[in-house]
Length: 161
Length: 160
Image (cartoon, rainbow over all chains, first blue to last red):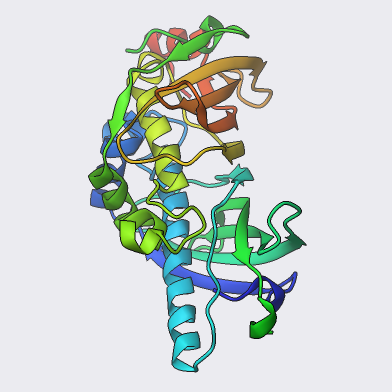
C-alpha cells in the first residue's frame, strides 16, 4: 500500500479481471444469496434478468478480492526496491453502489479503482481517509458495478518522509 | 410460490432473522476467497493491523446479512433483486464467536414508473450482535412483484 501522502486525486488503477462461471455463480448464491434467479436457469428465465445471473454481492466481492491482490503485488514490488509499505486500515463503509447490468455466466469483468478524495483523519493523526470510485465493466464495455468506498490509509511518519 | 407481494409491505414493518453463530473458521474461509487481508486471515498478523485482532471482512457481513434475510422474509416474498445499495456503514468489528441477527425495517414504498408490475421497498437493514449493538447498517431499495404480475401470469399472459 502507498502511504496517504503518496496518493493523489485522479490516480486510476486497473486491478484485474474475473470470468464468472455457472458453477461459481450457483455456489456463491447457494451460500449467501439463494434467490431462484441466481440458482436455477428455468426460474431465472421468468425473472427480471431473463436468465441466470450472478449475485450482485458476488460481483462486488470479486472487486474486493482483486483489489487486495493488486495491493499485495504493489507491496511486494515496493519491498523489493527497499521502500516502506503502508498499512491499510479498516473501512467505515461505502455508498452509491449500483449494479447497472447483470453479470451472466461466461462474462469477464474488468475492475478498476480511482481516488476521488483524500482527507486527514480528524481523530486519528496517524491515518488519512481515502475515498475511491470503484467500477466493474463487462467484455462488451457495459458497466456492471460502481460504488464509492472509504478506507483508512497509514500516513508517513517523520522518519519515512 | 412466495405469497408476500409489494402491496403487503408497509412503512414501519419490522422483520427479524434467526440468530447465527459466526465462527473463526467461517471468517477465515470467506476472507481467503474474497478479502485476503491479514486482519481477516490470521490472529498473529492481525496484531499489526489497525484493530489489533482478527475480525470478519465487512463484505462477509454484507453476505451474511443477505443470507439471514433470505432465510427469513425474502424467501416468503416475491423478491425480484435490487438495482444497488444506497449506503453501507460498518459500525463495529465482527469478532469470531459472535452471534448475529439481521433486522429489516420498511422505510418507504414506491411503485415503479416504468414497470407497473413491480414496486420498490426502501429498507433499513441492520446486522446486530448478541448485545443488540449494531455491527452494520444498510439502506437499500429492492424490487418486489406486485399482485398484478402474478394475476397476469395466472391468466396465461407473459409474466413480464
